[in-house]
Amino acid sequence: MTTTTTTSATTPPPVVPVLSARRRWTVLAVCCLSMFLVGLDTTVVNVGLPAIGRGLGADTRGLEWIVDAYTLVLASLLISSGALADRFGRRRIFQCGLVLFGAASLLCALAPTAGALVAARALQGVGASMLSPVGLAIVVNAMPDPKERAQAIGVWASVFGLSMAAGPVTGGALLAGLDWRALFWVNAPVVAAALLLSALFVPESGERRTRRLDLPGQLLLTVVLAAAVCLLIEGPRIGWTSPAALAGYVGAAAATAVFVRVESRRTEPLVDPRLFRRPVFSGAVLGAVAVFVALNTTLLLNTLYLQHTRGWTPLAAGVASLPLALGALVCAPWSGRMVGRAGPRCPLLLAGGFLTAGGLCLVRLTPHTSVLLLLTAYALIGIGFGFANAPITNTAVSALPPDRAGVAGALTSTARQLGAALGIALAGGLVATADARELARASRPGWILVAACGALLLLVARAARPKQAAPGPDPA
Image (cartoon, rainbow, N blue to C red):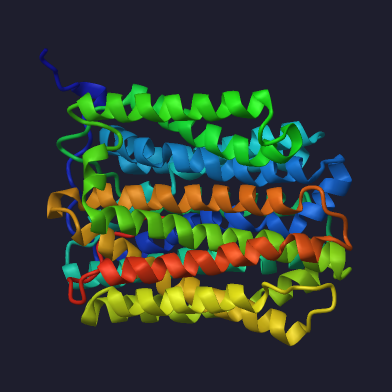
């Protein structure tokens, strides 16, 4: 069977000429602005969940879907969005993503029911999938000098880590004087500014040779991820051994098997299963999942515990997460420098150790646990999160040949978003039926899970090579 390369409308523009230094860093700033939105919307809603639940009459299960609809769709479409950008032009797809993200944000703000909000959040995820990998590709293309490119990637990774950790603080500040709909209204002016700046400063770019879109693989990947998250969220309600749950297990396993079989036979698969035969690479992907399971478990349990059990306001709950945000902000660039000097092993060990310590601090959580212990635990988890991202991407990229670096980065990005969805589903399942008095005890397994994720990173660190090149692209 022969294939033909589509020309004319689908032929990407040629690579742009070298830009001035000011223009290159302006491009980085525009792309980082959009990246901040993507990361922020992954976590900013967490602190507003109690208010959303009261406003729309949603239970814990419904609130989980409001968060996971976004991350699930984002995780499913990241790789395909990158392929579309290579084919049709990165700036064009980037701007389409901004428009879609902005429109979906307005629909979220106007949602009359929890179901409408879930649907709008899923649409937000579609737009976000066109921003994070495409924005990084634009930045890499605009900066041909390897040293300058490495600096830009470090800034990019820091912005993403900061946006994820700053979400609860930002959400708490918005909710202090406004209602939960402000969490989505605030996106509109930022999207408008990013659209204008991208039109003025971001050059068009694409690849001379583009990958074919793998529509069967994309559909099957979405089914597999959706089935896993759906079972975790709906399990407490339908019963883990009910006929519906058992049918779900069988369906998820069958979809996974078909996905592996189909992808193994395609010449340009969405996800090549053979990559996971490399223990270092598969360990790095698993580590990416673990880090974001830990982070999102922490954010959800923190929000519900502080607001339901302790009676804190959304602003106070958001401020309580400041140690987490500061830990991520300080340690993310530090980790990148450590990886560049000596490889990923040391920062991975630090990340695993701090995450484990933070989770263990709260395994005996009670309604009266001291605030100092809470803040210490959040700081430890934030430090662990900050140290984790750069070495995980470096480990994944270095485990494959140089021409597969983009694939490695895309898969670790997908793994991060899958971890975010799983963290929300697992944490929500633990406390779905607990009232305010029981929530602290019910959440204890969640803190054990956070510690276990840290321990898993320690195992990944053992497999990482001590000296490697500076980290490759780190798309979020």
